[in-house]
Image 1 (cartoon, rainbow, N blue to C red):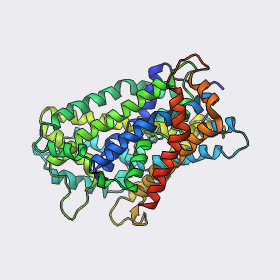
Image 2: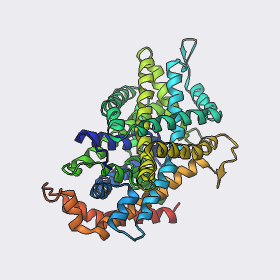
Image 3: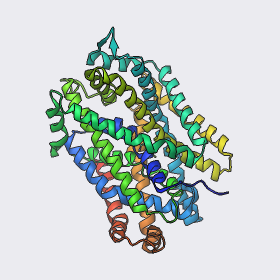
Image 4: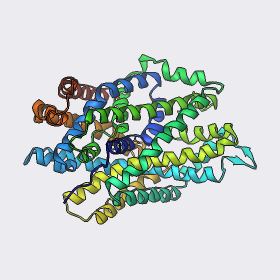
Length: 457
Ligand code: PFF
């Protein structure tokens, strides 16, 4: 059976960047920043992305393109009759887990599109204040089944696009809408810099307090980096399998890492100056920062301040946020579907239905667990938080660790160089350093950070 491929170079960049850029950048990144001390976290995060982002991404691309298979098939092709395909199964499981809680927040974006269109951040023509907007967000979270409905709608939407196939399904939507998202973030960023307490927000972001760096902050930054770049679970192996044999994977991965990081930093530059100006930060004495409500209350407030044009920008923003989330959920579902189609030989249609229903079945508990007093709580944390924790802070780092070990130590330099340079057709002077990082630095860094997190939670 011939496999779908990406129509053009921009196609694969758009698709991989589409997977990377999503709620992780605009929702999860500010959450993690606010909970982990701001500047110090940002610094560690940027360091990790800079040193590990491209090499780990390239490891996944190379495995995918060399084998033209889904993660399980890829490891089985490269190392038959070994335990390595387990890594592929881990990726499929991780895709399920991430999809289950990610789709909860993705569903919220749909609710907020409806709110934006209905001008619900205003009452009788007057902009609602910050407290009301926060209270309404919390009340919405308590509605339980409404969250589940939106979540279902979002998973259905994802299934629909995935069913239409890789090339025409994914490529088409991402190319135009992602740059638009960047543009709107820049406009918002410039605007929020003019707000009252923008300086305090910037100080929070750019004045690192090194005493805040603990093992758990390091793990959070590592997990956030992998989560944001969609690394460590086979999404990029799957996408790598669609990369053409004459593409330059180094420039592809550089573009994706750059785009992803730019969006995350831009989002922080929008959120924090605004959150300080509206009084959401610093947290009131005796309370914790509510990372979850950060973007869903701060952003409507920004649009409220803008009056007139704010109404339209608010709609456009939440639509773009939903699209960014969609291009990420597509990549998650694609991992599961590719496995069901290629390994279990299910027709694509049924594979998509099965994967979507499976994600929904787990996802319901994630959504319902956010209600106060919910029974879906484990170890004092909601089921949602547990899924987030186990995927970002455990499965992705472990997955990435074994992926770099596989490329660096099992497949080796000659194989890696041949694949990276398209059998010597590309002259890549950086291949030596990239391989060195994959073989020595990345495994060591990931292992040390992971262990320091275990020892110093
Ligand atoms: N990278 C996505 C984001 O930042 O929103 C989330 C994600 C997608 C994580 C795909 C992992 C993944 F495999």
